[in-house]
Amino acid sequence: MAKGLEISECQRFGLATVMLRKNANHAAVGAALQVAAPADPTWVASNELTMIGTGPGMWLALTETPSQHWSATLAERLAGVASVSDQSGGYVIFRIAGSSARTLLQRGAFIDLTPPAFGAGSVATTVIAHIGVIIWQIDDVPTFHVALFRSFAGSFREWLDTASVNLTF
Image (cartoon, helix red, strand yellow):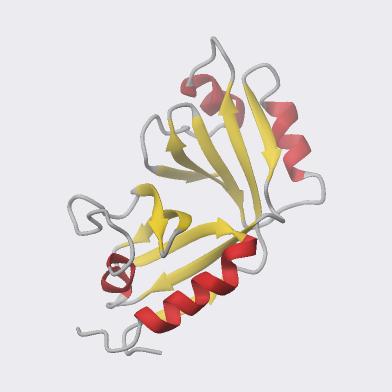
């Protein structure tokens, strides 16, 4: 692994897609969940729930402390406002951090990941190595989380290992 780079797989989390229903708005989602649901490609966290804006009226809801029926509880809270689909088993999330993290991701993502275009709180849905990913920046270390379908985890990990060779600082 390259110096200035930490890559790990998040082990325990709950993840669900949330899609706004007709005639509802992001403020209604926020009110139901007691967390401001972003109206743009950003993320916010509150009350052990992170809302990641992935498109107009669409979010990933993430918890690092899922109960057995957490997505059903989320769906109950959003009844009539948004549809909820549990994705916990379908996705993997990689944590990529350190001084070389941005450079590594920039080798595959064809979007501008440099500040101020992409900083802490930013979210992007893009493709890396022909794999659809959702990237969000956690902090200014920088630390990124990258979510992708679990069936592509092995291929993405191979890309990470290959792309991290000869990183410069």
